[in-house]
Length: 420
Ligand code: AMP
Image (cartoon, rainbow, N blue to C red; front, side):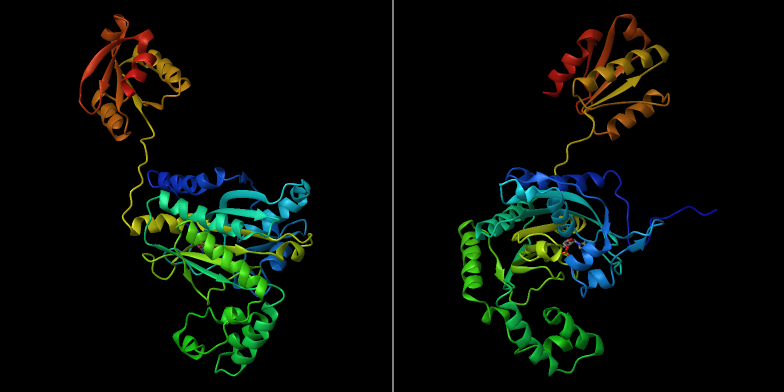
């Protein structure tokens, strides 16, 4: 029988590279934890209707990319393709918005699923860390989120990313623009699919990557010329707050993003070292989403950053994260008695908070020392029968090779001293 492989479009995170993924998740979460965002976790699947209504019936995500299925009990579910709809659903269900403390600020980290054509940076299973601020309309909140994502990327040492910023207007001005854009688009030479898109979601046509389409789009009406006063003022304030915070951005009047729920502020983080899948993260305001999924009016804003692409961005820039070795001390017993005694010391060290590992499997000294070096540990704890007879173990500095005898009872203390 042949062995199994990971399903198409997926890959496994395995040591040592998996440590980078954990560090990236942590680096993205740190500024959020530090800014009043509480951790939320929702199921990996939801009622399919939540995404159909939330993300949008006409989006690629819902029509082509969703892993939708019916359970034996007849429930129609879908693996989550994104985080915002689930998080808002959970917040509404738990009445978090009724606690008298808006905005409700939440962050999350998890797996997402889209049935896309796999390529570098585009997978069928991927990871995001996201943040949502629910129930407040305040340009400072939009700015906060963009600043925090910027801070996260900077803390990772990334430099070659850009922030694209746009406003998609609101329920006052967007319909007027939509109609004007449809008029313009209907006059172009476009294929069937794109013509259909004009009627369902004309803004998405602006996003078409094909050159022949882009050429025809020259002269298309631009949303920024249709923004109402309220949207213009709001957007101007977001821009000013970002500028004051020293966060550089580029106005991108064509940025529409692939999800239907966005209003006003939308933004994307793109990395120039990633080729075609250059968006490392994105988000925006979604003032209408709560009502679309049956909730009250709750203007909100959020983002999701892709962990996989952030790791690729680190690789593209040649950034190596400073990840401390998982093990500080490696214990090497020589003989049965030493095995018993040293295993006890390993447990003691672990309980004292020292990352410790043990040479299992009855390895000889040479092999065990090789494992000790590979583990990245700074110290080895070596004991044979003669040492034990004297109540000692040898503490070896794996860098200098220097070895000192230590009495058994003082091992934890001496190890701590040696590790500094
Ligand atoms: P989106 O919700 O499409 O804006 O996605 C937000 C971020 O998630 C993107 O900027 C990517 O970093 C990441 N992402 C989305 N789809 C995929 C995918 N198929 N594979 C890897 N990362 C993805």
